[in-house]
Structures are given as structure tokens and as C-alpha cells.
Amino acid sequence: MKKFLSIIMALVTSNSLGAYDFKVGDLYYNIISNNAPYTVEVTYELASVPEHPLDNYLGLTDIIIPESVTYSGITYSVTSIGAYAFCDCTSLTSIAFPNSITTIGVHAFSGCTSLHTLNIPEDVTTIGAEAFSKCASLSGNIKIPNGVTNIASGVFGGCSSLTSIAIHNNVTSIEDYAFNGCTSLTSINIPSGITSIGEYVFYNCTSLPSITLPDGVTSIGAMAFSKCSSLASITIPNGVTTIEAWAFSYCSGMTSVTCKANTPPTVKTRAFFEVPVNISVYVPCESLVEYQNGEEWSYFTNIQCMSEEGSAIENTYSPSPTSIYQKQIKDGQLLILHNGNTYNITGQEL
Image (cartoon, rainbow, N blue to C red):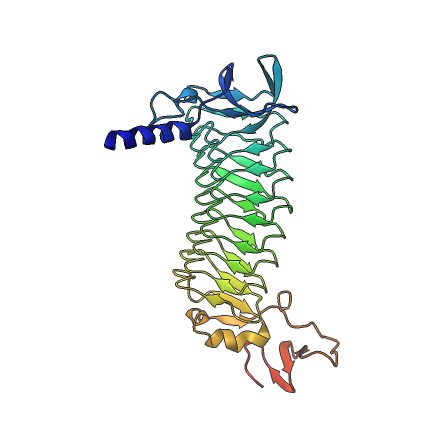
């Protein structure tokens, strides 16, 4: 019985490694479609040593993916880089993609520690989880193609030399760990369609100085910005209802937080742990007391009424009779009028 199970396990393991259909030049291919239009993906050889299934590409330094290959009289379009195709190819320094590529599979270039440049083809619509993770030499600016709508989990995690990523507004989701450990990242934009920031998305991005969250964001995941030690300020949109545990923990360089939410968001365990308690925290004037007295927000000792530019209160230098909250400047001091009462910028009734 034990021998039988061993045979079954060996078959399962062998099948999971996946054999190639044919080889042309240095590259191995799997046929995706054997009917017109004929398509293939770049894959890897079935290794003779199961513990190291991808050793066949380890010696390559520069790879040029062709737009098409011919096998048995049929010309196939190369449309995909298969899962794990070049995983842990530590000698690979550059790769040239054809415009025919539309899909880059999970872990396709994970662990390619010498890969230093990357130009993703414009027609790519899918980039799999951890496709470029741990590419420690990858630097410069990475542009996400317009057809990509999802930034997959861990896709650039551990790319410690990456400095800038351009994400277009077609992207609607960024999954957990996407940019985890990008310690040189100094610039990234969050598209307007994003509604949540997942767990560990920017964890340990120690060079990121600032980031703007779009108005549609409603939640900030656990550890999302933890250990972003250069992050000086953050503006939390009005729609955010929850800041998960440890979200901004160890952001030791933080100097200010602006929270536009009229109802103080729920703050989970140690969300601001090791953030200086005396930094300026700006909140809507009408919610000042609620923030100051709130159990989760009372960690901070310097909660203030929001500035003119950021305030959620209607700007009424020409007071409107329908306004609930109004502002006036008197003797150089900003005053808040509410329900017949007058308050100063700290929320104190006059």
C-alpha cells in the first residue's frame, strides 16, 4: 500500500511540474491552441531532478522572446509567459518581450535577482501573482499597461531597487503584498477606482515619502503602510470607515495625519503604533470633539480642526441660510458657526 501511494505521489508531482510540448532555440513552449489562431506559451523543461524543476534556464543572461515560432509546419503566436517559466533565473539580466504577449503568469520571473530593466508590452492584460517578486535589481520606472485592471498579490514584492511605478486609472484593485518590501520606492500613484488598500500592500516601503489615497477608498488593510519610515503625511479620505490593525505602525517619520471622515473611522489594534503621539492630526471641525474623545483616536494629543483647504465644512465667507456649518473670519481668527453657537478652531465654544 505504501509503495502504491508513493507511485501516485510521484505521478502527481511529475504532472504538476508540467512537460513542454516542443523546444525552439533556448526556449520551451506549451501549445495553448492547436487550432487557428495557433498560440503557445513560453514554459520550462521537465527537470530530471524534481527539487529543481527550473534549472534549465539558470545559465541564460539575456532572453529575446520571439513573436512567433514554427513547429511541425505550424506557426504559433507567442502570447503568454507561463507560470514559473523563468522563476529563480538568477543570471538573467534582461528580457525582450514581443508585442504579442498578453499574459504573464504567476511567479514567471520571481527570484530573477539580476534582472535590472523591465518593459511590459502594452497589450498585456494579465500579470499573475508574484510575477516579478524578489527581482532585487529591478530599477527605474515601471509602467503598468492600460489593459491591466488588477495588480495581483505580491507582484512586485521584494523589488528592493524599484523607484517608481506608474499605474493607470483602469486598475480597480490592488491585492495584498503587491509592493511589500519595495524599499527604494519613492513614487507611486493610486488610481481613482481603488476602493480598498489591502494587507501589507506597502509594507516596509521605507523610502516612500507620501501617498495620496483616492476618495473612493473605504478601508485600509492590516499592516498596509507599516514600517514606511519616510512617510511624512497621509490624507485619509472621507469614505474610510476602518483602519485595520498595525496599518501605519512604525511610521516613525510621520508629521501629520489628515482624516476627512466626518465619522471617525474605526481604528483597530495598534494601527498607529510608534507614530509620534504629538503630531498634528487634522479632522473636520464639526467632528473635532468626537475625534478628541474617541477611544481609538485619543492616542494622539494634538487633534486640530482641519485647514481651510481640507475642511469638510462648507466654505461660507458669504453665509448661506441653508448651511448647517458656517465660517467667519473675525480679528484674524477663524470662527465656526453652528446651530446659533460660535466655536474657535480648536472646537471651544465662545
